[in-house]
Image 1 (cartoon, each protein chain N blue to C red):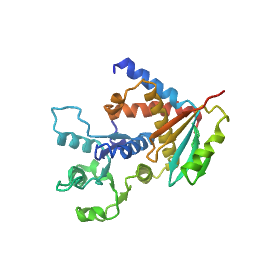
Image 2: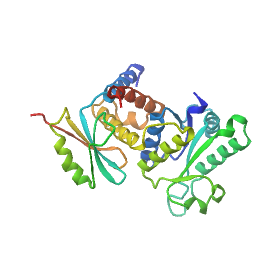
Image 3: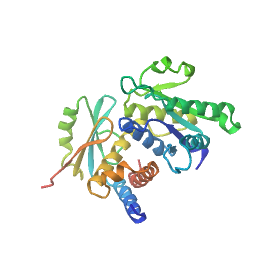
Image 4: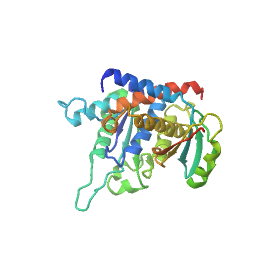
Length: 207
Length: 86
């Protein structure tokens, strides 16, 4: 796939985060980008190798460090996301010329929270989504706009389309054409194909 | 799922994208909006979900709306109301 259109998404995969991931994923697909997630494709490869491959493939990355916290008392915080952010920053700094143009969108859920644990990234553009999928989608859309400075659909239009797509997805699920198990285990690339097919149908309306 | 089933589902999504028979109650920027399938712009903007649910009833019987999809603030579907045409 095209380096210029690939977007590596470094984020949690827990159920609580899924609504945010779905909105980000839809937004990128809607705008013609290829979201890349570290789903296990080849169990022979270590997880870190898979992530390195995605970092190499993508000009753009979204790093969400909002789960950089312990989920229970006496539990250590999760640091996979900031670690992967660090690898990506290293790729941009020390990699070949092609990687010098890498661009990152860094998400957290509260202003200045990251400074308590990761002050090295102060000065970077950190966007706050407050755990709200619509906010995350709007930030992603505006970040993509800034990369090219070309006219793209508004955040309102993309959010509205995301809701309409979810409505149709729900109805297809209800009609037993997909089971809940199909949906829960659906690879993200398959999800992307359904978004693209749905958008193909939407062209009828000439929006 | 086998390849045929996947292709069938893809076609279903394409058909669904081209369908225009639903109204949506959607949360957006702290308000609630009403959308009609295939239209990118809100038909109405309301302050509360209750107001939106009241307002959407006015869309019943207009155009070819046969379902109202009520969304949660995260964009997922809370429920679908099927409108009885009789």
